[in-house]
Length: 213
Image: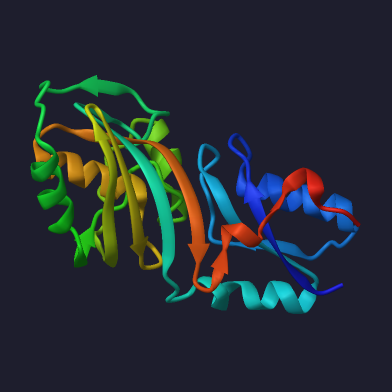
C-alpha cells in the first residue's frame, strides 16, 4: 500500500496521534505526516502510507505555500503565543477596523520571524519547548518567512479573525504575537485551522473516524 491520505485533524490530537491511528487501521508500519499541526490546531494534515508515499512527504511541504484561518485574541500576551500558555493582560487598547486592516497589510511580504520559544526547534540537541518548560533562558534565531496574503475576516474586540497564505516554516503563533506587538495591544493565537497545503485542499480531506482499511 502506497498512498497519501488527506486528513481533517481534529482538535486535541497531535499529528503523531493521527499517524498512529492510520498505522493501526492500515496495518502498515511505514506511516508519516507532512507539516506538523499543534494539538489545538485543526485542519489539513497529509499522511503518507507505505515506503514510496512516506519518501515524498518532505517534498510535499518544502517551499510550499500553506493557507490558514486563525482567531487571535488582542489585549493580552501568552508565554507560548497561544491559549495554552500563561496569559498576561495588556492595556485595553481598542483600535478601529481600519487601523487593524492597515497593520495587517504591513505584514504582507518577506520578513524575519522569531519562532515561539515553545517550539520543536532544536538547540544543541534539545527541543526549545523542553528548555522553556525548565525555565531555561535562550534565544532562537529569526528566520526568513513570506506572508503572501493576509486578509481580515472579522474584528470584534478582542477577537480578530484572519486568513493568511504563508511560506513553509512560518509560525502563525509568532505572526499573531507580532501583530499584537505592532498594534501595541499584545496578542496570542486562540484557534488555528489549516485549509490548504500547496494544491491539496481541506475540502478533499476525510475525518479521522472515516478512514477505512
